[in-house]
Image 1: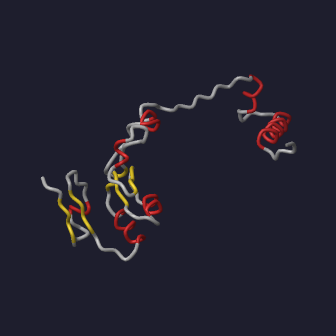
Image 2: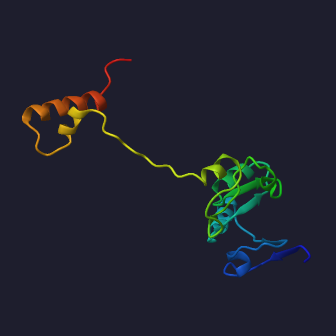
Image 3: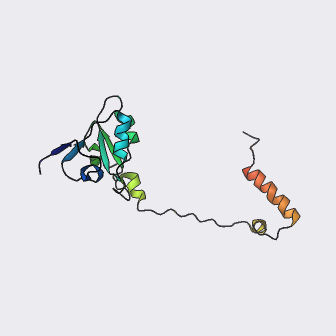
Length: 149
């Protein structure tokens, strides 16, 4: 397939609204970079994008909703194994490569274990008035304002 540039494509066209995995590019005329970002983010997909521009390239790339962006280069993110690779929305469900890719294979789980027997009495509803005062002091010590530096 030859590289194809599509111009004056309607906004509801599949070439604009869906992912294309071929050497194709749609070109749209916009008023300013804000409209360009809005038009780009209007699709349900967001795998990768390329932004060209000397002064505003980084600012536009940060606002575009996608998993990867290249500024003044074409898909340069794909050749750097330390960077996470993956999309957002309909373009992805995770990341590969780099530390973020490794985290995709992990599952964080919090386990809290009660270690002090006296604290058990503070967590029930049948506390005494004395226990309530003690509980209030413990909460104040743990979560109150700090008076030392």
